[in-house]
Image (tube, rainbow, N blue to C red; front, side, top):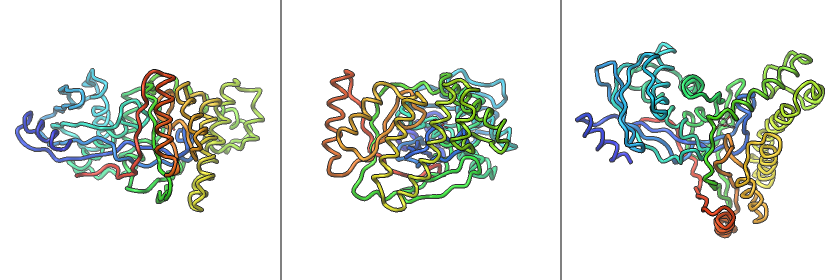
Amino acid sequence: MKEKIQEKFKTLFGEEGILYASAGRINLIGEHTDYNGGYVFPGAIDKGIVAALSVNGTQKVKLFSLDYDEYVEFGLNEEDKPAQQWACYVFGVCRETIKRGGKVEGFNAVFAGDVPLGAGLSSSAALESTFAFALNDIFGNNIDKFELAKIGQSTEHNYCGVKCGIMDQFASVFGKKDQLIRLNCKTLEYKYFPFDAKGYKLVLIDSCVKHELASSAYNKRRASCENAAAAIRRNHPEVEFLSDAKRVWLDEVRADIPEEDFLRAEYVIGEVQRVLDVCDALERGDFKTVGEMMYQTHFGMSRLYEVSCEELDFLNKLARKCDVTGSRVMGGGFGGCTINLVKDEIYDSFIDTAVKEFTAKFGHAPKVYPVVISDGARRL
Ligand code: GLA
């Protein structure tokens, strides 16, 4: 990929650029907890974005996407937003850097990626953090890593219409080889946990159902949670985020909020605790508990949070039937992948069965991605 990028860069701009990269992410557990001030437990993966950049001495960004085979040029003012969605991610990162007092001037860039799009692996966060990191480096801005992650998150909010939490951009910026990171999304304290699951494999099975995260469904979930938190806050003013609430406090307001909001909040409160339980279990090497929690998360995401779909429920049931230790829908949901914790000795037969049975039922094969926990944003 690097060679192709540099080759194109040379053709377009007559020189080589400086190479930067960042990664997509998985999340072992802690879904839809980030914007509720709860815990998440992600890691960066070996699929990501690579970009070549150089400063061009103008006030224009000249940008080429190898995957879209498309060239776009834009200025750096608010009114210069490009029409192409893919370019808006880069434009947003420029704008958010400038809003934070960072210097951004014209630059040339060519980029490409291998994060499957719409699979729930955060291809957009990978793109945002590659450019947030790269601009910080080439313009010498000295913005700290958390702020780089927030630049990506604000890009989603202000230029792409998704009111996402901080998890994806955090994982993409802070990711380290072989380490998962537990992040408290309220205090932003984090801790690396070596992920050393001897005897097990982590594998993603992609339903290839395209998830429309940008659609209003995600923002609607967030609004439900905020509504539930506001109701609880009336009785318990210390509740800043839904994750601060005890389960019984939610029960107190059941009659005051729509049932849908109650179910969403019930899921989130349970999920925050599951992250802590999984981290404890991992430290004990207790993968059985880790796996059970993953199944519980799937149940919650499917029945309470309602962000699963027929294909993902099918894959989850199949995993149970094949004696897979843990399985659940991963990421925002509405399609995408399940993440599976599978014992080495049943791995091949599980993948075989999953591919065969899924194909027989839905008429197309799922994709299988073994997970390798890798480094996040960096200069190559
Ligand atoms: C998407 C969002 C994240 C997070 C997850 C669900 O990936 O970008 O902020 O909310 O969904 O856990």
